[in-house]
Image (cartoon, rainbow, N blue to C red; front, top):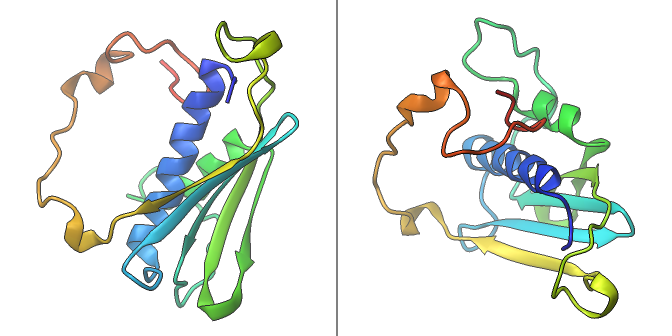
Length: 157
């Protein structure tokens, strides 16, 4: 979409937080899925994750130093311009975040470096379709940036 790498890093963190919250705390949409969508309007990018709702309202937790969780929406708040929750028909809950994403000129992006505006939707497979493999933590995370990733707001050194 013609945005800087630091914006892409922020988008990755926000999407990760919103998806993990939906998978951990909410029911799936019909068909066992959650929905990820993003759209661009001018210099703003809206990211959203929709699920089948939960018994509690998504809200920013205290995220104390000793807590194991509760920091996700605080991170979303810090990286975005604004975020919120929409309740839709059929019990669908959508958590959205808007961030500033000015266009950058890229070679080969189109005439005059323009990247067409629009929106994209992606369906995340149901949990039964995901492989049952435990991930292995990257041991180098405590010792600085991994794999040469530069420092950004999303990935501080």
